[in-house]
Amino acid sequence: MDTYYNGGMTPDDLKIWRKQHGYTQQRLADALGVIKLTVGRWETGDRHIPSFLHLALGKLECKKGGERKARDTKTKKEKSHGKHLSKR
Image (tube, rainbow, N blue to C red; front, side, top):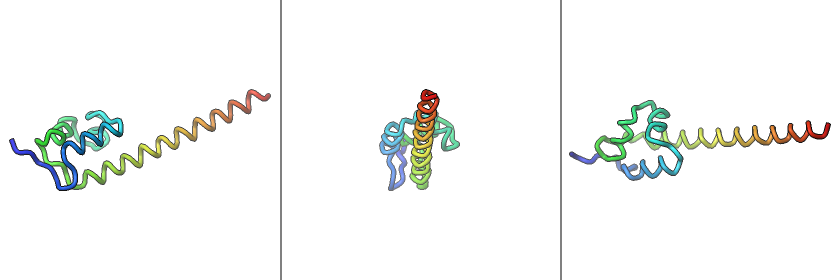
């Protein structure tokens, strides 16, 4: 069994990225439009990691940051709304 990886991302790099960003293999597979087995094979080196994967992961980071920002904004609005109602 040969180990494949592109010059930019090793199987360990992908696994570390996934865990640091809170993704399970299934959740990452769903986000990328592949099956869980593919992510697992990338992480074990059994399958070549596409050279463009770092771009997709960067997009997921931006999306996750945007979701966090929207959630924080909603929370602030809800808190503000709640304060307004308690003054009545």
